[in-house]
Length: 504
Image (cartoon, rainbow, N blue to C red; front, side, top):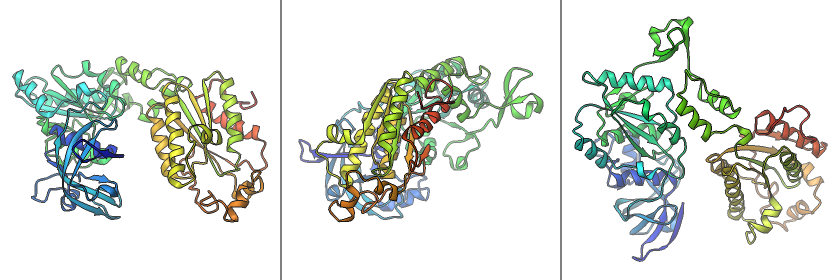
């Protein structure tokens, strides 16, 4: 989220956060039957499942803004590259408390109608981001008037999903398969898994329409998807027995569970498959593990076209970009271990970049202070550089203190858009870190000479999501590094067996 200077008309320019940006695009395209962002009364009503006039609507649609915009009369809403998308005519400002109806916590919100300022250019698969009216017009031009089955795809379509779609289309069709509307949920900033979804298009019913869009994250996306599908002209929604389908504004078509019949070599309704002949498709975790190890996905489970695209998107971990982030108190030993790990990774044959905390401070983050805001910015800069290294298939090893959980989560999210993330918590106790204090920093911090020093006068939030926890107390750094390298080999990110790792 970024708030910039005023535009040529004197209105401040604001880039909404990713959720509000997704809402904005859906409002402007006509996928939402809303003129703009909601005030508090509307948001609380929507949290209960309806607009104030009683019209069913499943989620609050709000615009969080920084405090300096709370008194604005007009705001230009821009994409992350600064291009104007819309102008918000502010009709109300409200302060959300801990019980905010949008679930986003305390902060300022603006409400009002939005007016298109320019055609959107930012966002992956822009050529497929059709407005509902455009797709309806295309169908009408081709004389389509029968049922239209909406399928919301957030991940690849394997054989089981394709079989269920064909069965649902046959069920609602009038003697022939109904047309299908494939709504592909795509992140704004990247294509995500969309190429693997689109690889299955030739295997869908012959009259399939495809549109890309960005749904709000989490459960909100699932709740609002049927309303968006209805705006595109869908008459039915493919279901899977999930929660909330009884509240869908479209009739839900659920073909029920399907299993692979090994005797007949086909996917069939589960009730028609003998138990001894039944097989279930691999879980998402099992698919990810097969891809990570460079194994071919089974042909009975995944179409060859989809499998090939998945293998391209998620190559074996030995060829996949990786960020290894070491976090811990000053003096915990993280930099020493990180350097040894970096050398081991380099010797394994992988392209390696070491982003050590002190070096980054001198080069990438020169001029930043040690305020919380600047420390967060330092870690974000490291995360951005690491994500770019990861995106290009390299390995980045980083060793900042990174004391705050929220900032570490931002870095993880940034990196995992492009590759893998491995978090090492160097959990050496504070007493041991102070004993090692070669620079005398802890002594100065306890004397009040260094304000906001992590572990003394400022908190260190221990990770709950660490992939590996190390305590370097009384341990040779080479042994600590060996532990990390063993974990990376065991996970498949480095070639070779894990036995004896770390001494090379």
